[in-house]
Amino acid sequence: MIGALIGPLVELAGGVLRNKAAKSQAETQLKLTEAEAKAKILLSKETSVSDYERIMAEGSRSSWRDEWFSGVLSIPLILCFIPGAEGVVEHGFDQLSKAPEWYFYCLGTAILSSFGVRAGGKYFKGKK
Image (cartoon, rainbow, N blue to C red; front, top):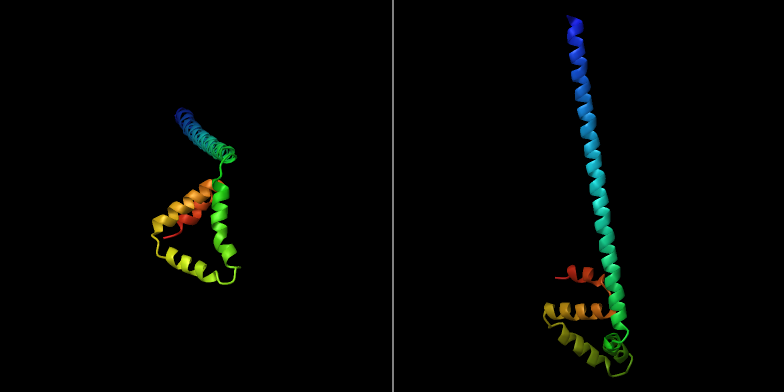
């Protein structure tokens, strides 16, 4: 009689162990599939970023915006070295300090896009 009970109990225990192993294998496969999907998304994102940067670089070859912004941004720097012009620079920056925040955000975005600097967005996100 005990022998008749042992066989089904062993079979039951074996079935439980097989189910646990199958469940563990399925969970591992799911994690692997998720990791592969995330890797593909990251690769796609990086490809998109490099394509964007390449397109922006090609577009700026015939553009004068970079030179214009460089010249405009250099004016205060140059004026600081001209005797008597320091007041003009100081007055200009005093006036700019009264400008609304959205103006600087728009100006910064235009300058950063002109130079193709995408990382500058992090700088503006922290400003309030």
